[in-house]
Image (cartoon, rainbow, N blue to C red; front, side, top):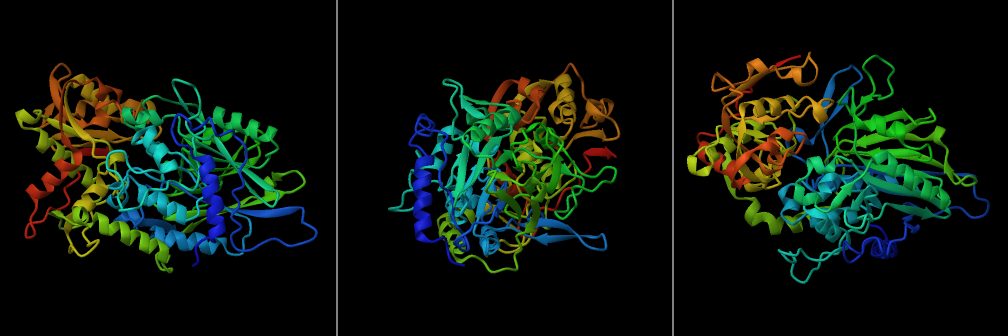
Length: 607
């Protein structure tokens, strides 16, 4: 597959130069919300003479790549597909070598094609990208001809200044340039953050929207991240920033675009929902009881002005193509393409040249698997090989051995085998009196980014856990904290898993050995954690007693909707979560006695 012609590349660079600015402070000053010509013209030209009244615009989209340049390993790399007989098949998918081929194949024969993303392109990335502050992923996205993306919460993991560097280029302020004589060029595509403003000035951090144009066809893209981003990112990552309501923000900029004559609008929203089935080919508009989609995106979609013609969403890592009624009651397409580049969405937007608007009744959309049985894109293979050579000395170092897959990200159970290993590693590392005297450890489930896979990922051999694989599981390198919490605060924290902000979508903490309780999912709210069953080493939790509790700095700051965990006192800062994880693997496994997947018997679940 040939790459985009050089002249298109040059025009993209010019656009990125216009869209990206030298500093965070100047990000908006030079960026009036004017339109830029972002047409690629993939796959051919247009006819001469009379132009037909309507033209089909192909919108290709994906979300939550998280720097997964190589195919994700284990169950985290599978897509569920329901077969005609009702059985569900797991299909290995993803990897930018295949994503590039899928997108380039899809664009053929579509002269009007635009590619957009729903955020979390970077952050929580495997070592291949994370070690280099995600420069390899931005380079890959440039090669994929991404036109535009919303920011996601993970784009803020390293703060606004680093996000500006990813947009505008320049070498890392601490680690410098990674390749001799090569300066990082930044993103060819604009990052949109319409609902993120700077506290001091009230001005947008990045562009709120962009306009894609080709042969008189104009489509506006507005990008937002979830308003709750500060609750799920470390405090340093969102310092000095304000996050605003998604619906109000999109409606405000849709009015602005409309006034400028841009009537066709797509919202890129880093927030999502959960369809009734995890199969990518589930019919989200099925009329049966319990069918359809739930979660935050439903209310957001219902509140967004009818001026917006389609919603590309993300964040929940789910696959869906649904219609949700807009405020006028008309159905409108809402899509999400799973995560890690395993799917892409192909949406047809029929553009009416007379009204400059999308004919909503003819919008069609479908998700497609990025299969691994198609040819690899050679340019992406070269990119991966280049960065792998730089990463190899660190990535390939063995840390321990496992006897079978230990599932984390790929486990849908409340208690995950890998969650138990991580929590036990944290407890063991921080239990000594001089390390904090921890009695119990909590791990947030969202911080477990992969599975530990028995099959070799390279030449290390089956069962060997390399530093790169351990890093992929815990890529944030959070510092560990040990704090004092009362028994009452402990009980409240466990109840916050299933109440408050976490009631609709529970976040079940992974707990270290010795802590046991019953989770009764037939009940509602905080009552789902049966208070009388919470025990530590067989003894009921004493509300008045003080316990030493280990957790990462994100949870210790009350992150993920756990304000009770943020009330800790007597804080001791320990080693990083990754260092404790690797130390545990080294202490508990050898080539002849590998670590086995632990039992999951700490949380008794009633359904």
